[in-house]
Length: 209
Image (cartoon, rainbow, N blue to C red; front, side, top):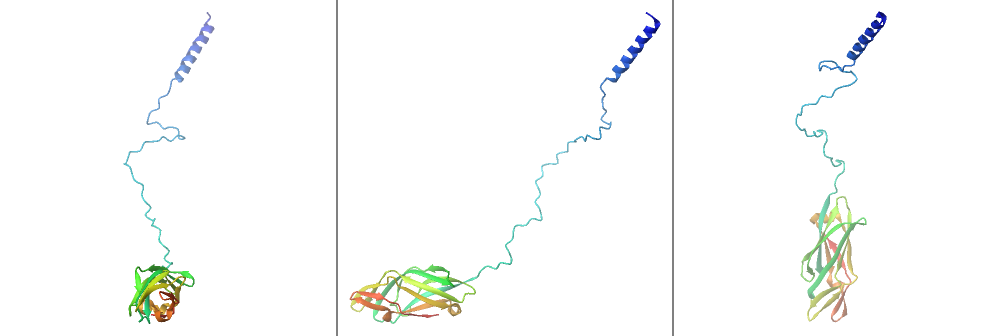
């Protein structure tokens, strides 16, 4: 083999050794800088579970301070029998009491029990009404059960009160004086004989406060 060919072979061997050294994997020291384009994620120390904080600025909703609630006044509704000297018993059951102001129904609480309009000077409580402040007039209506009973000297019988209502209007300023409206039912003029045992109710009334 010539000296020139041997020189070429030695040169190729040296180049191969150099390239092989460059193919070895590089080990990055922890202190070395890493690629600036990759940000390593470092685990944070567990500081304990924290509950989410409430927003100190959040307050419960408030009602509109500009809205003033409606104030109501309560009044009694009473019924008194007058001109009833001829009777020892006039037993009526109040079936319904209604009230309205300007066509708007008002809250009514009906009293329980039977009223005896033959009892002199007894103004029976038949119910209460709730009237909004600022109301001027109240329209009221009272209806009895269909049948009532009466007793008089030498006679007893029934009173036909079907389809009959006592209707009147009360001024609020007048009711405010004593907190009530009182209906005076004139018995002597309101009962009409239909038979020896039956009377018909055709109410004649006045209103006081």
